[in-house]
Length: 389
Ligand code: FAD
Image (cartoon, rainbow, N blue to C red):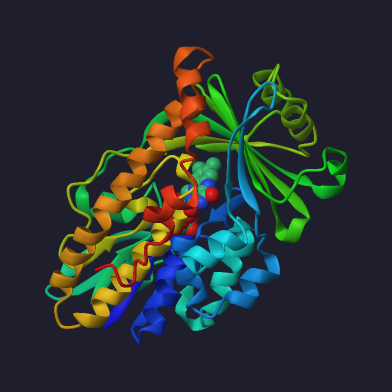
């Protein structure tokens, strides 16, 4: 079976590796001239890391990934702890795979390096596709074409494949923007920040930060409610002074991190309405192309990796029934991805509550039982997308 994967992001590359390992004839077409990944850090939880480890990537992942000890969520102004939950050895022992933090480019590059060079076609921007009987023909801007039995659109939230198959529809601005910064370790040694997933929540915004690139840099993401987004570009250079102004009155550690940004980029966070279906004929979608989500569960990329695992497992057991495999793929994946889209949206409200009654109730609930405790997070981390079919 010949498969064309459109998009060489974390979803497309990991799907291609999984499909290739299952003996399928896969090629990845990426619009960019080389594999990069915008943004700074990415958290990969055990439900996704176990799938990457099966591809034999452990030593490459360990070389650049950080293993946080815990998740620590705190209040915005006084730094009071709201909840702590383990992410280190206890999580690995319980769920059979570690929790990692990566620089996004490190993860994208290690996936691309694991793919035989002749399987990855960069500089190939998909502009058209056509389904002819049992074949799909993809057309690229550089006039190249590719023919396959199955085409997988892993081309992100602005998916061209989705538009071509299900009709044009623009992503919606969620009302949140993210400023991101990568801070060299030497600039913030005085803050003595532990190897953990740190989160600070406050009125109208929150901040997440963790070490990446073997501890050489701190990834910092500052997300705030913003109102409108009228610019054409959805990612742009920002101004560190604007970030500091927005985080006036926040804890000195948060302000110390922001002050140390060498530069910052703004990211307008978008989502899309739920699609009734993910597949049409011999074309299907995965990752942000079909289920973009806010980052408040840190699961968008993890879910795209799960999509690739489920699709691979189904094509392996139903090689002569692509339509049946795609129907089953959607049936097993959609409810879980939708649950995570909803949980992410709910966390946006929880994390950004103004100080007051609802915030007190939230803090008490977090203190009673952490939503990230081993007992409460099993539904997410224990899931094996390759076998839950
Ligand atoms: P993308 O990463 O968008 O990749 C799509 C690829 O397709 C790109 O390489 C693009 O160049 C290519 N492409 C696009 N159009 C075409 C075309 N026409 N032809 C050819 N190629 C094309 N997720 C987590 O799991 N953990 C986290 O900690 C986390 N943190 C996040 C923090 C922030 C601030 C944000 C915004 C998101 C976060 N996410 C996280 C979500 C995660 O970034 C996305 O869900 C993930 O990158 C989606 O991967 P993808 O491969 O589906 O799409």
